[in-house]
Length: 371
Image (cartoon, rainbow, N blue to C red; front, side):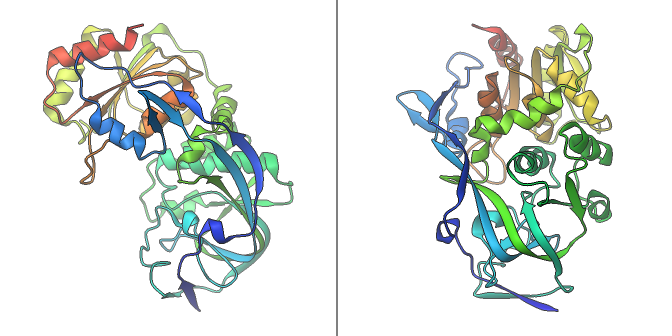
């Protein structure tokens, strides 16, 4: 059938929503200097783009409300480049639910005509995943977290819809394995609560979703409720030996393209001298990943989705992220600083494109332990 997607509709245009959680403005720990005189402008530019305010040298997250919106007779997509996009009854996609979509023109043009199978009819549904759910960071921090919160705020009769991993995996592009996906649902208590749906267009008599006010897709990270799913999952951690106190998180297939051979050699040599153990999370299940991070003291890693696991640590982990500006930006992506701040970890960063030398890396490792 032909389905017409009209121009975007904004959350602000929707009927009043129920507030399910509130968070006042709060101070966040600033990043620690990796070495004297370090220029943190690239990181600070990203932080300010992540809703954090810089007030007189102190960083603050915004005051937030988590709101539950309800659409009558709406539609939502799985696949088709529009994962997680919700449409009102008149065919207008709700802009905030279309984050990270692959079909960019949908919602931006006056009309986008799609050739789709007939919509499947459902009753009452919650949708919390976004267009980037195939990325581990997005799955854990947004899809899984919102499903976890929905299970606590909605009646059991409400379907919590997620994409079917096995079907989606046939087309590739998922950055985590099926066992990790299964364990994430099991450890979060959602295995028997969510419903996996194949790609398609779905119509629901009542359709629910969460959004934060003021809103950006990542602002949910500042809520105390955000870390609840990671706390719930951490109880499954198995105690590890002291060999895993100091972790160098690396790539199993070789050097991360985000740091390169030369920088990796410098970093690895310094970390070896300081008793770090090199670990990669590719090919090991989620239980092992949770267990390793939950018991660690220090963790060093290039920027990448594996750093999401610092959220499984209860607090006080010392994190060194090898970051860099990506995709033509002048700023770093700050999400693992934000994750560190909400978990009260000590966070240090190095610019992996900044001509690092061994002395700077030594100083950064020492900065992890500074008071």
